[in-house]
Image 1 (tube, rainbow, N blue to C red):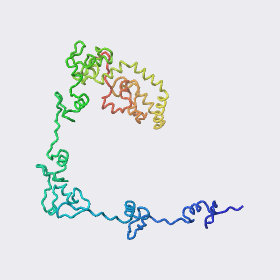
Image 2: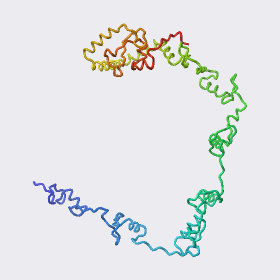
Image 3: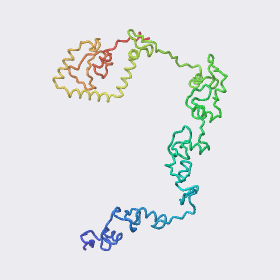
Image 4: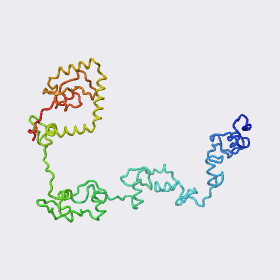
Length: 401
């Protein structure tokens, strides 16, 4: 059985309906033939109205103008204008058409701007002033009835162009209130909102408790709530007892550090921040080491990975000779004092820390005591010497005030 193809020449697609393929069959249904119609750009089409060469962009083959005429008037031609039954009421003016207050457009505009409808003399030749008629006002833009916009609005609202609004006072009018920002009726925002809510500017709480004092012995402050002042009421609310005092604040701005030879200001327990931190870590070394040990045991894999990564990075930059020299140098400086403070050293420190890209070469190894090693941490040795002055002085717990 042979397979039928489309009857259109040069089309080898299989026939689907009426010996045509799907594409040509759809063209026949839509356009009436197997060929596509020639499309013309909208910009190339002209309005179908005679003597109109405007591009046909409005619809139905018309331009926008004729399309709107057909929609509004039902015709492509403009409707005839109705004859006016009256003319401008100004003498010597025969203009008609659309009148406002019996005046044509020109005279009505003159009436609004200058307050005069004289038409026999041109406005330019009459010497009409271009400034506001109100004495002392030099505004001259958009005059209406001879007034500027401000005075015209006052005349329209109050029938008087000289009307002046009531000025707001610069300071709140309530006694003992020195607020300079007023929002309405001469009041600041606080008293204005109180007036709107209660109808009075007086404080309702102070008005009731004005003559009563706090019931706590030795306190003469004014009552705020539950027969107590604000301080004792807050203590009662938080702790259940108005006599509770958590701490007594002692200002230390004028005190200096109690450590010998230190002239810095005291911040905590009579010590500056530096000596207080040193004494705190010295007195709490066991607890601190226990916390560090607990954290290490809980995150052992993380510590192992960090150490292995650091050692691998260090070993990658060293050969066998470098490692041998470093080992010999470690043995040579085993009995040297601390490089930073001169005290007895307990470990080998890297002058440029490994965490910041330092290596394990012999020239990067120094001896350090425990205090300097912990204080230096992962910082450069040069920075530690310049900023911190090397190691810290030992702080004895018994010397702490």
